[in-house]
Length: 360
Ligand code: GDP
Ligand code: MN
Image (cartoon, rainbow, N blue to C red; front, side):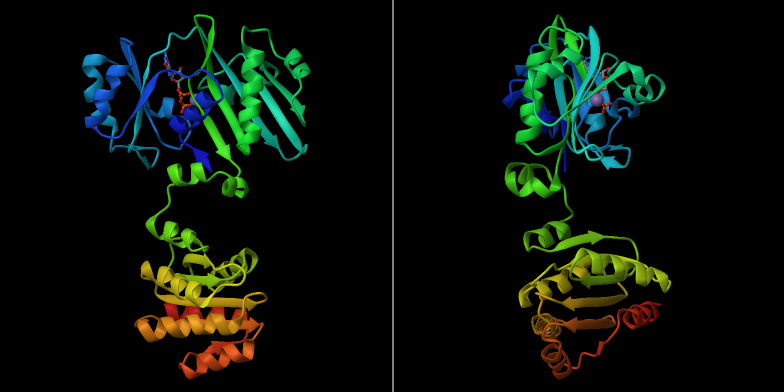
């Protein structure tokens, strides 16, 4: 999960890494708080998750009298397809140098990389491509003072690197990046923050989850109930259990010329209630047909069947539904479905072909 800049900077502050004075502004009424910043000139930064904001117009400078205008122009507008609902207003730094510093998980080498460059700033990608010699990379498995030998001697850099490393590890980051790392009057200041937390470790960091994750209402509802829900843009809703089966189901639907509207992975051991909720969520986007594809392992077909039946008895399902269900307690499940006049199909191919036909 990517963290927005201001959340990354809160984290920096917590680890003793210098950041500019700033306040988060969500509406013009928050502008009063900017009084606490004593600088003449300010920088207004769109809090969106897309990169390259500087080049796309998401970073503006403003003198105090212009601030309201600049902020009102940004709030609510779009930046590279993302709506700006928050801006960070900061003191404008005097930039003497722009450096680059990051820690990143290096999967290929099964270690971490410290990456540093004296040519930081918005053109770092270009530098990496055209002048790779200007970028220092050091592989490491744990922190030790000796890695700093590889970095040019800049006042405060060793201390900063060890703080960033601590932050990187303690927060299960995939990336902790400062670009630009600004040298301003001989002090190192993190002018930007880009932090990606490993999704598989998010359960250890509920503090990020609540504050920053931007899910659609449906995705949020699904997540809170232990379901994985992803919206797509076709017209066939898909419910399955297990990522592999769900992916195969999507492929199969595509193979027969259909387009999935969304998918819900009910995971292993879905309960009757979860199954009911899954159907409710899957149908909210008004698909043309629903395909339920369950391979019972720890998931029991009778529970799934009961969930489907309960949903059907309490709601009108106005679109065709295709159910394919095999595995644990299959017979019991099929009986429950039959009692509720729900037909089920034996193979995934047959089910996918049928649902594509019915969605037409
Ligand atoms: P990004 O483009 O999304 O990575 O946004 P950054 O926060 O890195 O800002 C892009 C560029 O804006 C930086 O490289 C700086 O050149 C400039 N910038 C950002 N903050 C300041 C500031 O406080 N003072 C000055 N002079 N420039 C800034
Ligand atoms: Mn940046």
